[in-house]
Length: 137
Image 1: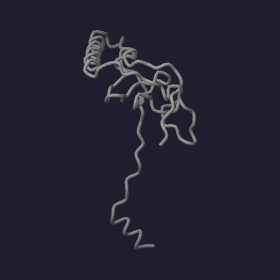
Image 2: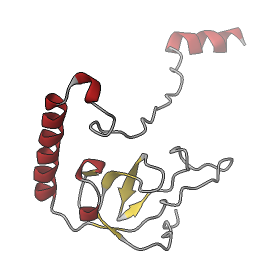
Image 3: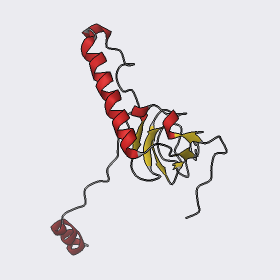
Image 4: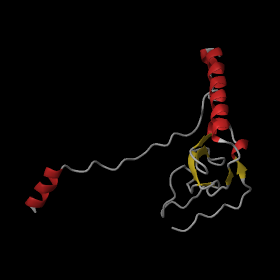
């Protein structure tokens, strides 16, 4: 498989992104909110994976790539430091929601990103069903 190409834009530092929009998964891997289409995407090897504008995967029929595909990332935050900052941000967000009256809780206080639904393949037929089909033909 050929290496993925960069989108040619300036490298983004992980520390410059909002803490709640990044989940560090390893040395150069992360799940993060794409800065262009605002959907959760995977970053592997310091590059945001190729994805369509609507957040789905790019296929042969759907070649409308998001401008954030292939974005270079610099991992300039240690995992332990990121976890600490993330926990503090979550606590602050929860305190703000708890203090606010029910009618004042706006989407800005909650984590707002698009939810990506997964499609699962149909269940495989049971062995006796496969045998019955073969015997019937």
